[in-house]
Amino acid sequence: MKKYLLIFISLLLACVLLFSSCVVEFVEEIPDEQTDNQEENSDENQEENTLTVVDNQPHVATERYGIAWYEGDEYALVNDNVPFFTNADKTTEVFELYADKDTLGRCGVAYANICEALMPTEERGNISSVKPTGWVQNSYSVIKSGSLYNRSHLIAFQLAGENANTANLITGTRYMNEAMIPFENMVADYVKETHHHVLYRVTPVFTDNNLLADGVLMEALSVEDDDICFCVFCYNVQPGIYLEYLTGNNCLASETPTGGDSSADTTDTQDGETVSYVLNTSSKKAHLPSCSSATSMADSNRLDYVGTQENFLAVYGAYSPCGVCKPYQKP
Image (cartoon, rainbow, N blue to C red; front, top):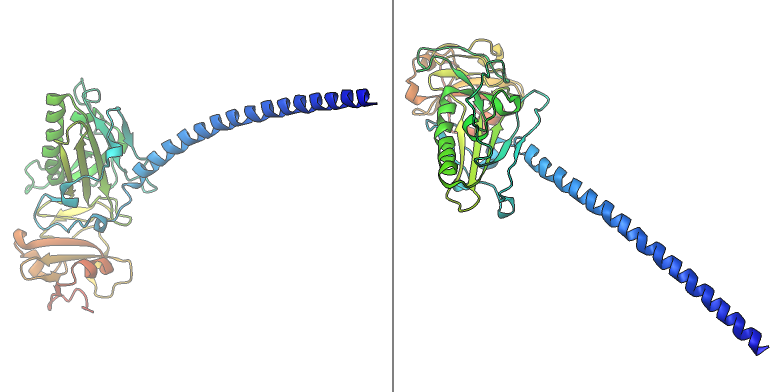
């Protein structure tokens, strides 16, 4: 009897060991497959997160970076002239990213690691076929080149060799374009001399549904030595010219704006409605564009505002309405 019992116990143990081995082998195979999937998903998520951060950059309000309204300087320093890159962003890997256009057809952020591998080896091509949002071209004798607007590269051709890339071209005034050039030249000269890399990001900033950008935020940081480091906002304005940012329409500052909303010349404005005022930075008074005080105002004291009444009061609340044209009632 004991003999049969020992045989039975031996067989039972053998079965248990065999079953355990199969289970262990099965369990060990599952984590390998799961790990591969997790790593693959992790890589995909990392790529998506990186692109999401980049794509979100253009959707910022001007006030986010404390950028003051234009008062005569071509550009303003932002964040104490320190770009918003982190040490984790620093890489010598070559990349070039352009955000998809939004529902209004406006360009988003352009971001690249500028190096000799990206720089053009051929001459610049023709880009006249591109019509960015807000492109209402006119020529004026008060502008040296005549033409008001340029097809402004977010990342300059000399840095990345992009020609008619519609995701890299916005409607920019000659004034803004010239303000950007010294910073572009600084980066180009540095790369050619050192053979190093420069993180470079240009973000067009639009207010509400305006087709013409308020300006561009330019950031640059050299990867190897931090010798290049700047963060500036270049204003998309043109002295002596009135710009309607909602559409891109324009005229001489001394003339009543054409193609704009006639309701801008009324004191009865509704919430969210676009208004147009001419501000005297010396007397701190606001006028309607058709006001005689506005048409005779010296360019050095003139500041044109186009936007909502709410935003105007929030930014220029210290200004007083003209007692003659009475553009609005001060709360």
